Image (cartoon, rainbow, N blue to C red):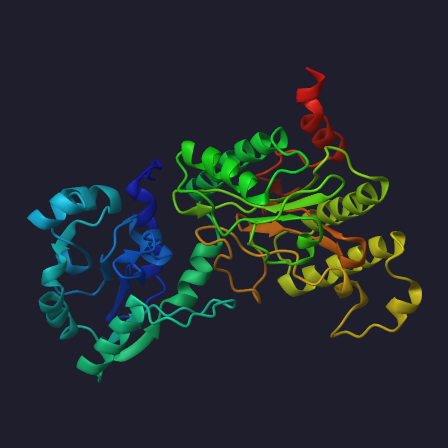
Length: 434
């Protein structure tokens, strides 16, 4: 691993909190993600399933975690299964975690080889009444591929059909949505790495540069600072491309006078950051671009103030919509007739701001969190309003990562990343002044 791992006390505490939500005589199982094939013998880089990582810190494929607080033998209350290093693995891939290393990382005292899983699991099944399966119930999930977790659940139901079933995901949705201080520090590190990348490209961008060249500069800075790279597919959208919300081609040349919408951020230790900035290719905003930019910035600042304990996500977005409507009227994009004729299902502002303002962020870029529950301190949300004007050939989005506080104004993990028009213009033109 490139990152500095957290102390295993963090993972031990997460498991303890999970256990308090389990029913008696229940056994929970968590599987690593697959390594996904591309074609021939090629695979995608491994990404650990965030749930087993949250509960153990183990960042290795094929690992399995069992939590069984009512096990007859105390050594089986927590079990971690990892792959034993063979001579072939040692030569071709390098040694995997040994049992001692796995304990050091996770705090789990009983570590077994993966080859022993079925025998031990069979013994424990005779003692438990219920399995906690870890299904994906995130509100944005749209998975079409059968996962390692899916295959395990299918196997388990076939071989142990009389056991009851519980769900891990609703528990983890609540636990993971509230960040421990250690997690916020990891996210701050991701944000700090993102800042280094952003500052790097401010002096690099100029007319005729290609979007993918900007992507390369960011990747260089992220990786050299111990990140695996981008937390999500980078969006580097110049000119009219900014009006495509999930534009990831990054293959166009940046033209003088255009804006570039950059939705790009680093990960660190499997924790995401999520940044959006919109900057002028030529180093200076036009009057109209500045007007729209500052309108978005005002919405972002006001929206951030609304992230307080007790707020409901749906109501929050309704309030942000009212703020955005006012700004769009001020820009001449909407008028009072538009607002008068709007419907609850399709408010007028959606013509120019069609996505949500905030989402949970953490181990996943769109992280766990039950949106019908009130916001709480130490939840981390993005704030990302935007105005998209296809008829004028540009769009503006601004985004920071915000930590809700028990009292007072929320903390912006990206507060030091340039966002004001004057600072961006100064930094982009600084080189020519020297």
